[in-house]
Length: 332
Ligand code: ACO
Image (cartoon, rainbow, N blue to C red):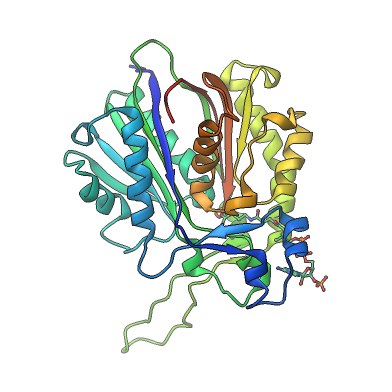
């Protein structure tokens, strides 16, 4: 059985509170100039008060659902790609299920950091292609601002909060919208980006060294890894799609650093006009960065539908996910 899939709707949600580079100069030794030239980031949206990643996820899920015109009760699975859940359990997917009334969905979370959306798409495609599901909702939601060391200028300036969602369903024609998908992991490079979880041993056992739940990143190594490895991985995925690089309309990369995006664009010889970036406004929103960039570019008319696109993400793990998709009219 190989039932084709359709990308039926996408949406996003970001918190209202905006922190500019200039604002950050009040708490760390940095400058707007340094952040802009090294990363392309000008501002980021962050959670405030008791807002949570799940709240953003619910907003993004509702937006994607309304575009897809699929009733919540028809959803078979909700997959939340989340690095910092509101609770370890219940899962974010279960919390989102309750809020949107997807009473018939099985729910679980995955952790693939910034590759989370693409990993979720791989699972959704397999579930639908095999006949196990008809409707799968992926919600990529990350609240990285809650686990940054706001005294570490090398990492805290890079991230923002946000959520993006994608509804994938059975195709109503013969076209499979996910032409190719390629997921990779290189666990031996896990030390490049880490977020430890705190926790104390049983008082009757030897005490452990307690970790602080902060993102720790070797930015230089991540940078080198991505610019040397990712272009080849993207080329492999494009080859599997049956299209040629110059036949693909848009490149929507994970928004981690403008210099990385420009390096990819050059190495793949992609028309800069068709490379999507909104890092300036949102910084790195982890798993949410690709669906936010994609939805926003469609809504603003920068991406014209129907079209083909490469979506590619990389993140802690190290994980990498790339997919070549066809995007139909009306999805955002
Ligand atoms: N403001 C001012 N100066 C700073 C700041 C800051 N915010 N941060 C670092 N510096 C200083 C450093 O201390 C260093 O000073 P020194 O030369 O006196 O020692 C200098 O700037 C240069 O620092 P580098 O680390 O060499 O700067 P680099 O040009 O490598 O840029 C950056 C750092 C932006 C982090 C870059 O390496 C990068 O973007 N890497 C990729 C990160 C990435 O993609 N992460 C993905 C995460 S995805 C996920 O799964 C969470």
